Structures are given as structure tokens and as C-alpha cells.
Image (cartoon, rainbow, N blue to C red):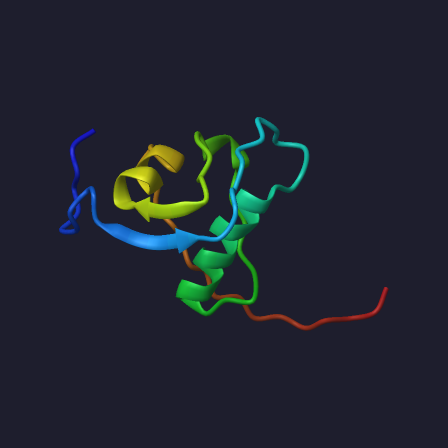
Length: 92
């Protein structure tokens, strides 16, 4: 896969203290999916984030994580969409 980003593909961008396994499921939460959505939420300073777990295609192993590793986990080049909503919380 051609790198469309300015970062070098083999650059270390994180160090994990534990494995983040990839579970081939769309029915249950996984630590890896939670890590990804928490990252989205943190980046956009949002109250919550979600994604379809079918887009996750690999695990992350304990230790150094490179940009290539992230591209293996999320290989499709999908976009993250930030939506602002207003509303009122009411009791049912």
C-alpha cells in the first residue's frame, strides 16, 4: 500500500505495554476497537465515538507500533466524520 501521508511508514509512533488482539467479531466490544474509538474521541474532543469493527483487520502487538502497523489495522483509508448535535436529555 502506498503511503499517502508525510510520516515515514516505519516511524515508531507509539509503544504498547500490552497486546491489543483483533477479534473477528462485530457483535462484541474489543480492547482494540475501544482503543481506536477512544483515539477518535480524544482527537476530536467529542463525547463519544463509534465505528464498524469490520474495518479492523489486524492486531497490535506489545512493544513499538509503527505507522505501517496502523495501516495494517485500518487499511481502507476511511474518513472520520465529526458531527455536532444539539439536543435535550429527557427522562422516559
